[in-house]
Image (cartoon, rainbow over all chains, first blue to last red; front, top):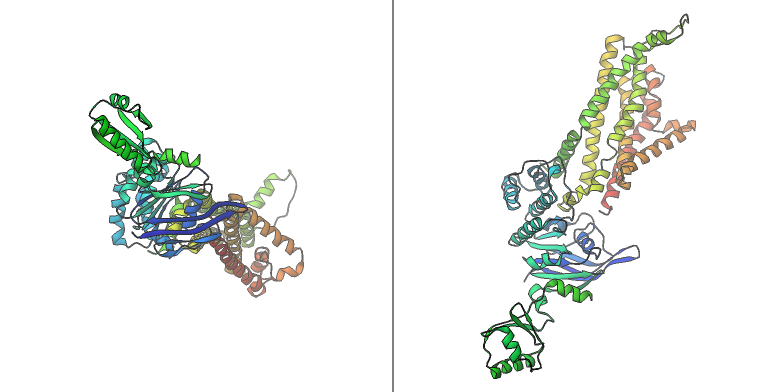
Length: 300
Length: 254
């Protein structure tokens, strides 16, 4: 798997306040990488460092093999960026603004028109001709994504793209980000854990300037839990009654029996018990946890 | 169209949409008309407002009076309004964050500064040209201007001084990133020029000399060769300030 972003030992201080402490992060290509953390945890600072908008105190960042430097950095040619509150020129409409962006990115005239139309359709602004000054927050976010994808970046950085949107707006943005994964790598920060859970392949959590965990979402969900969800050919209450005198911790949850089986020996013992009791299994699966639970557990 | 012209086009579009073009045309046209008009009606006004029976022997107004009005009104009213109009060139973008997206798309920071300065320069050129042409045409209609010396050089002195103040405004505005930053820095620089002007020796280099010596230029008491040092210093200082602004902006945290 190709790594598109390599962040090695990044430290960032504002005066005496250390906002990022020895951050290491590797983002694989063509994934949606969720960057979770509370407000003020340092997510925006790291993103600005990745864009060369802030200088680093220590460490290095590489994007698509190009080192990020403070100021005008060559690595930005591979990046599309959507700030948390994207601000556009209010006297332009969406097409005019994207044309300006296309000129800035040195896109050829022949390529420009088709790409702009394609992106406006992707974000649902193709039929909007009004000035940006009349746009809602959601429309601005969608235009923000369109401009970020304009030059087919290898990395799309989105800072809290859903934080101030209503549920419908959030769903739209998440859907667009998921579609964008086909042609780019999406790195987006959020403090809404359920958003990350909906579309991310990988998740990292930043807490007080430190990465607390980073892994594939599926691994994270299964980590630590050790709980399995069973359904049987008999009613779940009856199964629980028949297993009452066994040493296993269990509870009924939505007509399913949730049993705590943290290791293989317990799992085998439970299977034997079911055989002994002649209880037939209809389904069995590891219990996944909501990412939010995991975050709360980590934060204690 | 390359980046620089693309951004310049945006600057132009913005200035039209925010009525800068309209304001500059209206204000400097009015000033252009006002100069000969004030010179023409001043004696009549005096006669009207003096107590009855008072005899005032005012000389007939001449072309010089009209141009004296020009060099009073354009730097005092015109230039101040102009600086105020362009005093938020950078701060508005820095405060709102509209530049961040474009800069991360590869827009050169030097392009931002040079395009903004060039657009302000175009407007200043328009303002001076408009005001000068109208004043010239009206003055020529009423009076004979053949006695006036170095008319074009005198107006170029005002033009060059304006360029320096524009550069200083842009620098202050970029440095402090607030609407008042640019105006305040410009005000302080002008005050510094005035303080320097207390010392007679400063006349050989002080950019303020370009404003104060215009009457003597028109009457022929001074020639362009007397002013070439402050002229060159002012132009050189304007270029230096623009370069300084670019350096500051390149290191600015966004």
